[in-house]
Amino acid sequence: MDYENLSQRLSSCESLSAMGRAYNASTDSISNRISRAARQVLAFESEVQATRQPNEDLAADGFESFCRSQYFPNHISILVGSESQFVYAADHATLRRKGQMTEEQKKKRQRLEDIFRPPPGAIEDSFALISLELVRVKDDGRHHPLILWTDQHKAYPRALQHNPHIARMIESGEIRHETISSRKQRTRQNPLFPVNYIDREIRKDLHEHVRESVCFGRNVNRQMERLALYLFRHNFKKTHRARNHPESHAEFAGYDRAQIESKFTGLWEDRAWYSRTVLADWMEKIWRRLYQTPLAAAPDSLPAYALQ
Image: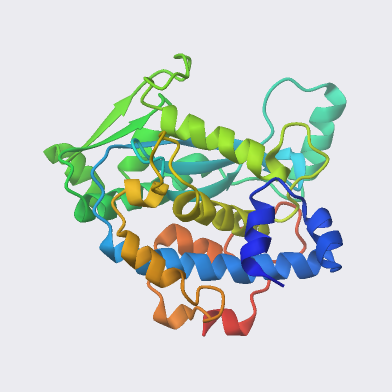
């Protein structure tokens, strides 16, 4: 099975069933190959990260979808470069169903939550995890101070205080947290345009996130593996949206083109080793399948070779 073709199909709104028909394989086989490919691209990004020199502000927000059931919506926190639209980090949080519900729907939610109840403060914890990447971007970059744009969600300022190092950098002015109303027009002049743009791309390119789709994620870890593979193609394969610029989003974010191209060689042939790879915290959760799927009977298994 051609991994490059597989990742391209996944990023072109093709479902697992459609890919299974194309490859004459089961959806389990397709998911297995995507899991392997996700670990490969996480290792790839970890290796090329050493050469980057970002020179931009950042924006962060949550992409909302669901996994397993619409009674378990999710909030995928995403950290994006303001100029490059490069995605620096992503993390998943399962939430309680919100909004208006009928009495029958409320009863059903209660029955499901007797089996699995999303943890409180999930958005805050998820945002705290992706905010760890602020320190890495600040250390790698030339931009002073580093400005993080978000909407006015109350969990975000609290999450930034979770890490004492980030809290000190905010206090000293090395990092500035600026907010803007989520009700502002979603134009290119809006500081949240980068995350709004990524939201749109994910919504149209990953079949499980298309609005009112019959195709939806059934396992959180596999959902995040598919997202990791998609973000790899977005960051390193797709050209930047600016006209007359053949550079990828990664090159706009300060990654070295020669280094990227050299690492592409053997990407799908040379197996990535966990013991030889230094992963960011958000990558670690995807690689080791540390997410919990609502209503799952047991935690997801991870092949022994994936931790070698």
